[in-house]
Image (tube, rainbow over all chains, first blue to last red; front, side, top):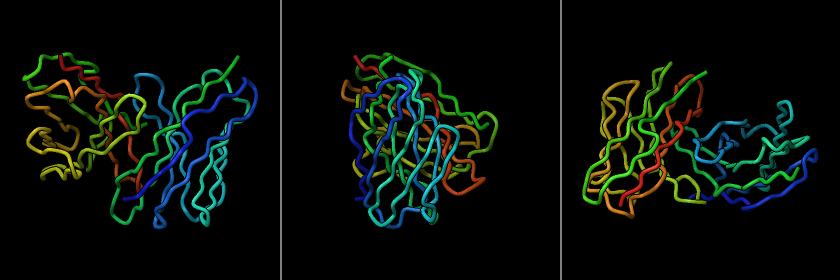
Length: 112
Length: 116
């Protein structure tokens, strides 16, 4: 089946930039997503990128997509303690299938 | 924005009982709803896809007789865990798709099920 891989942990100091990486195997992926999950809560969609884009910026968030290498990254500028959470990378192949395939999530810890 | 609610947010039950979890789209009509299961420190695993008015499509390895899904209206889907056992203890999350553009799903806050 299709696979999405992420590193499990990332620790950064408050004010620094965080970069969370993700790789995927589905070459037919059409949309790639980043979700944030705070403890005991559901998922919040942070941003998404369509597969024909290389980059998308939304305030402190920058998504970079290398389709050739099937590599996706999420950069959070000026990381704050409120950014501490688990970040999930997910993909869908679209084409009538709206099923998301999630990575295991990266736990971001922000050190004050 | 699109809001999805789940009820209850947590439930504790005895082994052998059945538990029903509701998922509601509060301000939009959801043509498709999804049920996920998340174990501690693990990713979300899709259990089933539910379209209003039709039978749910279950993922491989998910017992449809144990996890009953009903999607009776465009705003409500229910997941019933029948004859629950301790191994069914998990965090169950639903999501709903608006259909407004390709692919976006809105997630509920999740239901923590503990089976004693």
